[in-house]
Each structure stands twice: as structure tokens, then as C-alpha cells.
Length: 241
View 1 (cartoon, one colour):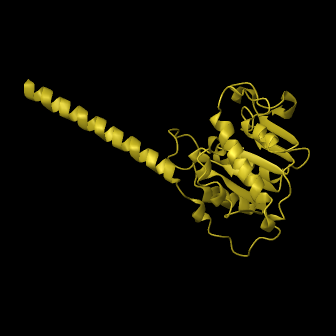
View 2 (tube, rainbow, N blue to C red):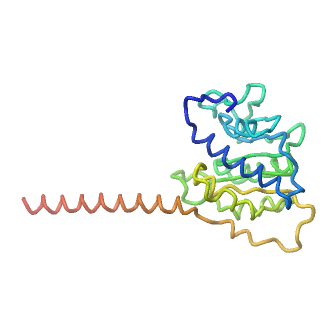
């Protein structure tokens, strides 16, 4: 596992390895000959570098992670030479050479509308293949965040000449080693040789994973039970008085 601590099971690394393993296998399928090997992989908002460590373990020969040092809460999972200190919220990115695959997961929603749209452009200028995910509405308790459905981002990628591969999702949807948030939000985009005259209906990307739906229902039921018990205690106390 590269520079990872083998004594600790890292859920982020497990999700990254599962997702990229599925993507690398998908790219090698006979009907995906247009997708090259992902030898050089870059990541915007790489944080500690778990996704890039997974990419190396799966055979990628070169990686580059871009993020601010403040965002890395723990030692990097990649070599320091493979990390570039840059605040993506303020600085436009221009890779010196295009990557075979660019990863940006669960980050764009942290940016304001203008910068998040510019980030999509930065990604599309840096590669022909993007693995992207971002938080959907009601995903978190941060009202200042730019939560959007995946159809929103798909429309922005489409303007840059990229289309989502709708067949890839089925290859990781049921993999329990991958965090349900990634299974729900990750979309693989590829630069199109020629865009269709009419834009596809991207709303079919807007889905909630059953594991997340079930978790929400469990929390709501637990909260309802707590409120019910509290109400009963108050009524009993009032009756005793």
C-alpha cells in the first residue's frame, strides 16, 4: 500500500482502491478501447493522498497531488515530490502536461459558484478523463457549501466537451468496500470525439444510494423514538405533580 501505515485499515484508501480498481478494469474492457492506460494520474484536492497511493498500487507509474498543506491533516500517503502546495479555492490550475486520469472527489461543493465552475474548466484542460464527485443537496450540515445534484456538474462538463459514462456506475454500485457517498456521487467523464446535437438528460445521474437512504431512515427513527420517550417522561412527571 505504498507509504500507508499497514497497521491501520484506512476506509478512505479502501474506497479509493475499490473505485479505481473498478475503473481500471472498466477501461480495459473491449468496448472501452478508446480509454488508454492510466499511467499518469493527478488529483485536485488530494488531501493526504490516499487515492493517489491506491492508483500507484494498481499500476500507475506517475502521480501528482495538488492541495494546500493546511488541508493535509496527516502525513502524505505519497512522496513529498509528488505533492504540489496550491490553494485550489484561490488559484487556477494548469498542469504542465495532461494527465491520463484526473481525480477530484468530494471537494467542488466547498467552493463558491464561480470558482467551482472554473475548477471544472481547469480539470477539463488538464486531461481527457475525469473521475469526479461532489456533495448532493442535504448531504451535509453546511449551508454555505455549494451542494448540487450531479446533473448540474454534468452540464458544466458537457460545455467543456465531456460526457458521463453511464455504464460505469454498475461496476461499483454494490461494492461494500467503497463508501456509499462515493458510490452515489462518483461519475466518470470522458472527452467526446463529437458531442451529440442534443444534450443528454443528465437527471438520470441524480440518485440516492440505498445504503445512504437506509442510514437516514435509521437516524430519523432513532430521533423519533428519543422524542417519544422524552414526551412520555414529561407527561408522567406532570401527572405526578
